[in-house]
Image (cartoon, rainbow, N blue to C red; front, side):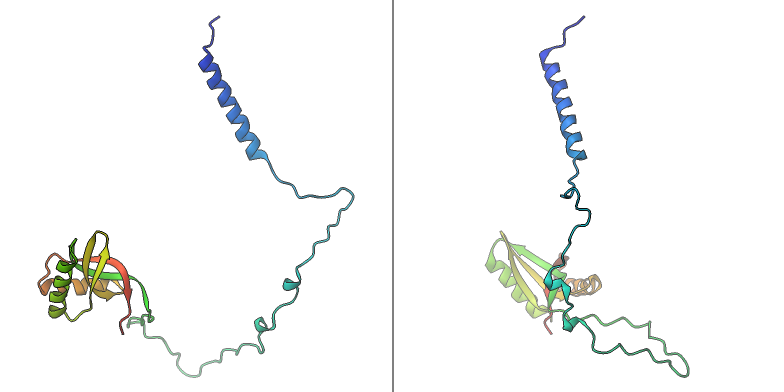
Length: 168
């Protein structure tokens, strides 16, 4: 009969202990503390939850829908719905330049401001100063602005995801 090396014995023992540990951890279920002989437990509702605040109780029933007379009215589904006015959020801008020198970025921003009728931003994302144009809420708006920016003399411009603000 061959002898099993000591390292193999330790390995097998550690696997057995790990299995016992996993099985004992998975089968443990915490039971509620129930006293014998006391079948009915007294559950109390906190005072704050016992009464419904008056502000949550409606004063009247909501109005019932009225029947329409004549031909039914249909919504115009051919037009785009209006976008809600937002102060700021995720959107798109057109990046036209990036530099490690602030002076260069600001001079490109000044040129872009004279060529375009859009808001121009110089944003610092260490270690770069990035010149970006516009506040577009949708990708379609950004694509239109990108074409306009390229025609204005910035052929290497591209669309970037950015936090935009409502300038209106």
